[in-house]
Amino acid sequence: MSSLDGPDEDNPLGKPPVPEDVQDAIRTLIRWAGDDPAREGLIDTPKRVARAWLEYCQGYQEDPAIHLSRIFEEVGGYDEVVLLKDIPFQSHCEHHMAPIIGKAAIAYLPRDHVVGISKLARVLHGYARRLQIQERLTAEVAQCIWDNLKPHGVAVVIEASHACMTARGVRTPGVGMITSRMMGTFLEDDRSRKEVLSLMGY
Ligand SMILES: [Zn+2]
Image (cartoon, rainbow, N blue to C red; front, side, top):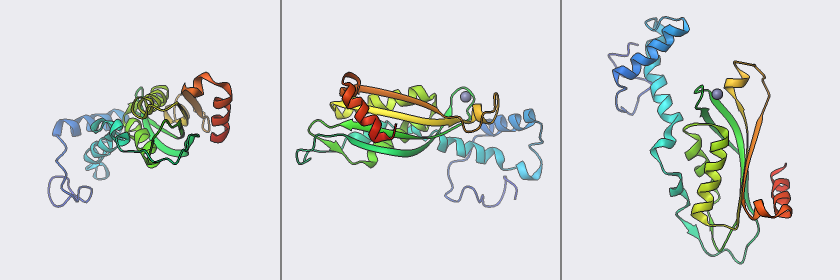
């Protein structure tokens, strides 16, 4: 089906059209890679790629802190660690725009109030759906929780593989990178840090 007429199966909701200059840029990239953007299988690819990139980078449309604005103050005296682990995420590295695929563990030590547990994952996705480096992603998630929940401590550990390393360059499939950011009690107190890392499985 031509991209110029008839319904677009990839755009059933009638999203705004992809500007011609954006499509042209993707056609240029296809040509640069060695293929013909005019051949049938690639005709609608520029539009699909452009829309896919809007999804990959949805994080630019939001302030992740918004997910931490609704807090619960009735915690029944609970003052131990709250941990969400094995949260899968996808991001894209800002150096190659290649996928970063991994999982995160996010913990905090509440001070008087908590948030719905799914909100921690939303904060992660808000920063992951941008062009990133893993180090900054880790730091941004931790800082956002620190600033908005004002907890006693925050611990974030991210483990991911980078397609720019596994699928090109040194081509080392299976290799994973681990980054961590500890704040407050988890930074200052060895026992707390060891405890949270062990709960996370490290
Ligand atoms: Zn990269």
